[in-house]
Every structure is written in structure tokens, then in C-alpha cells.
Length: 319
Picture (cartoon, rainbow, N blue to C red):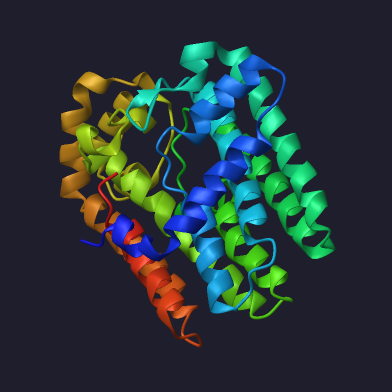
């Protein structure tokens, strides 16, 4: 098992400066904004998106605007989480109460809006049109992904490719932006390699979340297990199992999913195991992780190896 602390050991000073930058960027005269923003920034996130940006920047030997851009990515990410948790009515994230549970839905949505607007203020300060375009397109497509997911809430998606496109928009796009922005800050060098890495990494990352939601341990994940079922979300293990079930098992899956019958989750997991949906999901994670690593073939050096290790860590993580 790869260790995130070991992988990011060489980035410790950068990540400390990033945290200081984030605190300054979200400091206002409004106590509620300060308290809620601090809650998001200090809630135990892994900082994977800025880590990707920093490592890719090292590969491309660029230091300009790197921490600035990393802060922008984290602000956008925090804003999406605030909005997500309201839509999903989530109450736990990283083993602590969500902002909407502590301050209410209205406050969470409005501070999410503030973080989005603050991110775009910082983007303007970078003064690079291509970076602005990447991040504007990214936030637009994340929003589209959120709306599409809302439209299929409480429905079983019967098309794996359709689901993979939803998670690319919702999750993969911001990872893709992390590496693409690093490329543009370095003059646009290797932009296609950068985008390919981020896209494949992001899809693998979300698929690992899907896997852990059904097959992980709550004490490890820091969130409620089988939360996707309770929120009416159709994810890859469920989609694969439904598509490969006999009529009797399909009826049981529909009954449990549509009724959100958590008390019958063991029965659902038995069907998943019969259909090898856990193995199928793990193989998809490996497929996208390998594609991400392959995108780095033309590079060499310590930063490249750290990105490879990071990819393997995220595809194997327990939380």
C-alpha cells in the first residue's frame, strides 16, 4: 500500500504555504464566511488536486503562479462539496459533521457561492487567458454533471458509458484541470498528456469512491457506508450488477434501490458478489489508473515517479 504522507513529503513546504494562502484568500469581514470557509479548508481533505498541479509543474520545470493556481483549485473543489452536501443532505464528511449540518443549507449554499466567486477573482490575477478558459469550462461542466446526476436520482442508470461520462463531468474535469493548468502555466507544453492524465486519474478516483461506498469500512472512509444507496445514486457496482442479474435479482435490486431499504443492504451485497461487481469495479479502477500512468510515459524524474505513486495510492486507498 502506498502512503500519501511519504509520496508528498517533498511537497510539505508548498502545502503549508498553500494552506496559509487559502486562509488569507477566504478571510473577510463576515464571521459566518470565515467560520464556514475554515471548516472546509481544515476538514481533512487530501489536497490531491493541488498536489497534481505542483507535481506536474515540477515535471515541466515551472514555478510561476503554482500555489496561486493550487488555491483556486481547492476553492472550486470546496464550493462543489458545499453544494453537493446540501443536494445530497449528507451529514458526515472526513469523520466530521458537514457544513450544512452545522450551519444550515442556506449558509452552506451561499458560502459555496462565495468560494466560487473568490476563485474567479484569483483566476483574473493570474492573467492568462487559457488558464481562465480551462477553469471556466471546468466549472461549467461540473455544474452540468451535477444537474445530470440530479436528473437520474432514484433511477438505475442502465448504461455504463453514460455513468462514466457523468463522473467525468462531476469529478474528472477538476482533476483534468489540475494538470492542464500546470501545462498552460508552463507555456502549454504537453497539454494533451496533461489532460489525459488528469481525466483518467479523476475517473479512477471516483470509481474508487464508488467501490468504497459498498465494500469499504466506515471507520476508514470517514463517511457513512452505502451512502450512495440512501441518496438514490446509481454507481458502478450497482449498475454492473443490475445489468448482469437474472430477472429475480433485478427485481430485488430495484426494490432495495427504489425503496432505499438499507436494512437489506447485505442482500444487495450478496448479489453484487455473485455478479463479481466488486471485481469488475476494481478492474475499471485499474484500467483508468493504468491509462493515467501511461500518459506520463514521455516524462522522467522524481516528480513523475511521485505522480505514478499518487495514482497507485488513489486506486488502492481505504478512504
